[in-house]
Image 1: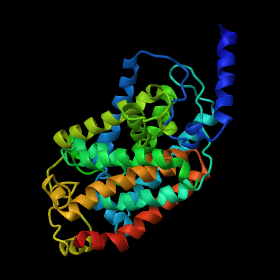
Image 2 (image 1 turned 90 degrees about the horizontal axis):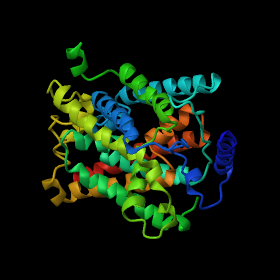
Image 3 (image 1 turned 90 degrees about the vertical axis):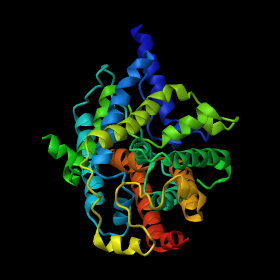
Length: 177
Length: 187
């Protein structure tokens, strides 16, 4: 049993370093599930709780405010720069501590970090997302929170973003990366 | 305490709390913080259409969908229980600029002068809601992440491609907000 587990873990690492063209997850190294554990569905409820807390923070920080995003892009307020800057600072320290002390998950799994490989999409896609961010005043997280605050028409923005994602997937091979 | 929670939270309270989402998700299940991938999972679940980009085991990533539904619920809870109902404070310069486009309502984080169901019938509302959303979805996936996946998670893990992406987000935003958006708002 233990040998089998070790083998699986090794295989898993190999999978992570491989980056053939259509092993899309490594090109798209965000929000993965690195856990190899199988759990019943209700284990996912803890992510819903994390989401609720995050949603509350987004609203109370006014990150979901279209006006705050406009202020940011016009350099009229420090607020958003302070939020993102301090979030990144706390994130860097947290990741450093996790790596330094090899902290494990609550299920005693080693925590995995995935390196992001550069591709030109980081620039082209980044600019396109920036265009959209300035117009909608919301990145994907705030879109969900905005709907929660009662701005139901943002469902249309969200659906449009899903369509945008789909269209990207459709044309992916033809786009420069 | 409750009164404090009802006020808008200053950046030095909210920012570090957002940063703590990174270790929280790692510790409770080895999950890398990020949101825009949820849009991809929805595509993979609903309309994969034999596109290789959407052919993967999205059920393995279902935690991400629980997370975004949680965000929506969090938005509801915050607005129902944790607000003062005062109008939103905005830089007077921005307020003066927006007034020239007829945007004067500061009751909601999502401006009611721009984003409402009836506004979808106007060119301005349609462009901002539909085209704006499309650019967000297309751009984040092309970039391989959004503000959370790149700017927060990626930078926390000191990934330079994430820094490139973050700089691109900001550059794109600066260009549109200052140069293009005035024309859209005039529509």
